[in-house]
Length: 333
Image (cartoon, one colour):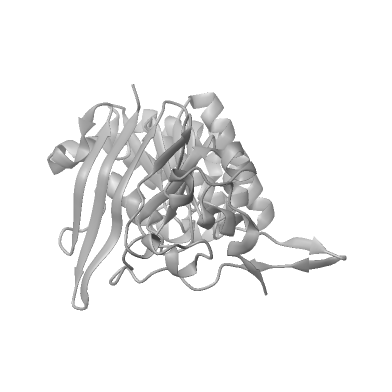
């Protein structure tokens, strides 16, 4: 049985300008101990999808529809009291910026032990000992001293390790990591990604990794879900998607990685911009930026077509059995 199943997830926001359709019919599942990558440009709906899984969208102005099954139970049908028992205990989240995720007026020890005390029947002394173990687990030196420090006294990498430790302090089986390396330098990014892989192996925790960086997904994820305009446009094992992309947008993302020509690094771009979620185009949401578009692409929205086992693409070229997409979607700048 899947650990998590998301069925026809739709998230909208009512604004003074109109209805924002942030997520439009997303479907996916997560297996025990698996790492999946939710990949796409900023504004594609990745973070809204992640926040929806724990119902962290304010209603109103937001509205979440569909079904989110965790171990077979629909989280959207649970009362807030029941949901709070799952948040942080069974399903935890790492937010984008470690500097804002920690409370500046409480010590690290107070913040970790508070989470542990909420979900585990431990004495204060036991909770403190558990907090020390958590800091050791995420590779922080001198955990006893760190317990008495405040967030501003720590580096960004240390704070991110603490956030990961807090998320795992109650032995969660699913970890949602929203751009966990964005605010960190390259060296620290590599350390955090290595830590996530080690924790997956040691604790068998499943991870949903949200990123706009294809390279990050390539290093860590078992499967990739490519997201654009609030929908998933391609899915599959990471190696297969990277070696043989079957949607023009995926090909465009891969083409945006720097490449070298005659000892000069070139940078490609995808023409145009992500769609306005207040006014999504008819048909395929990527068609205004796609050089492969046909007339029906502007009128009909393609569904996810099966390509092979665990491979799907929302492109009419796949439906008609067309060849693999090439690099004509992108241009050098």
